[in-house]
Amino acid sequence: MTDIQKKIIKLKEDKNAIVLAHYYQTMDIQEVADFVGDSFELAKIAQNTEKPIIVLCGVRFMAESAKILNPEKTVLLPASNAGCLMADMITPSDVIKLKKEHPKAAVMCYVNSTAETKTYCDICCTSSSAVKIAKSLKEEEIIFIPDRNLGSYVAEQVPEKKFYFYRGFCPIHNIVSADEVVEARQKYVDAPVVVHPECNKAVRDAADFIGSTSAIIKYVENSDKKEFIIGTEIGVVERINQLIPGKKAYLLSNHLSCINMKKTKITDVLNALENLEEVIELDKDTMDKARITLERMVSVN
Ligand code: 13P
Ligand code: SF4
Image 1: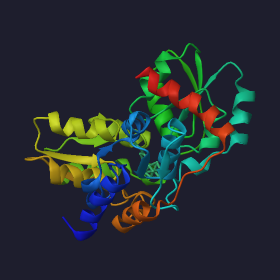
Image 2: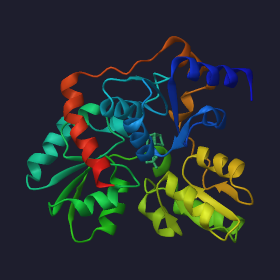
Image 3: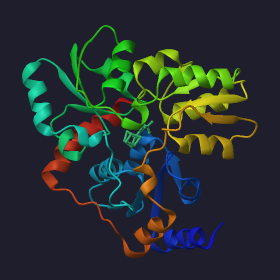
Image 4: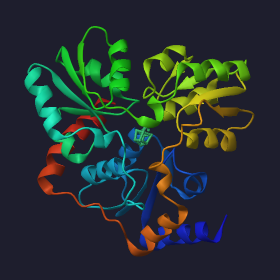
């Protein structure tokens, strides 16, 4: 453990803070976190923690979700410029337009969206909860925003409903190609291909398993196989290789590193705890409306 990591652990105690990290964070940050998870798990922990200070090592929409679910707590985002490229692809006016075009449809919003976008939606979802949530809705038509890839994946699993999509996508997952799957399979012949649903359809169709970040890790843990080709962010590959004995993970594509997730450095986590910054602030009206969509999501699971 480095001196900076030791300081962070002491400061967590002194300030009565909890550190939450997404699986896409670097391993030095994962090591000092009280909990490491996918975006759904982080939202649930943030909702239930007793600690007055939550340090969210991830991207802005995750810290915003923690704040919305816990408005009386101090939520800190260590790297204030860590946004999500997909979340920034859609604006409230895009949602309003879709609602006018499909007035009978429920609006399902991937949590990878701004707090403001969420206020125009009926329910949120994460990649791990999306299929269950789509099935749980009474409406037969669903507007799915902003990720067209996760949306089309959900639509394939819920054929009884009619879906309308927005054009958003994750540039990191979307750029992976089916050719890269073929190349990886030639290199690692006995390794199953495991991908995140933010990958495009051609890649999903070529994969052996599709799942959220946590589902991918569970798949690796429970599989009899020893080697895996992983089609999601490199942080997941590093975690598998360091923490799951006897298993070896290979990254499906060199593109799979999220520039925003990697903006948080261990020194930013220390700074967040020392100086209590950046504090997430949202106006009450936005939080009250967005909370309905997040609480509905958490209650379905
Ligand atoms: P998870 O919901 O699997 O944590 O994914 C979040 C994300 O940003 C994927 O790119
Ligand atoms: Fe957003 Fe993609 Fe990064 Fe996930 S990997 S945080 S969807 S830009």
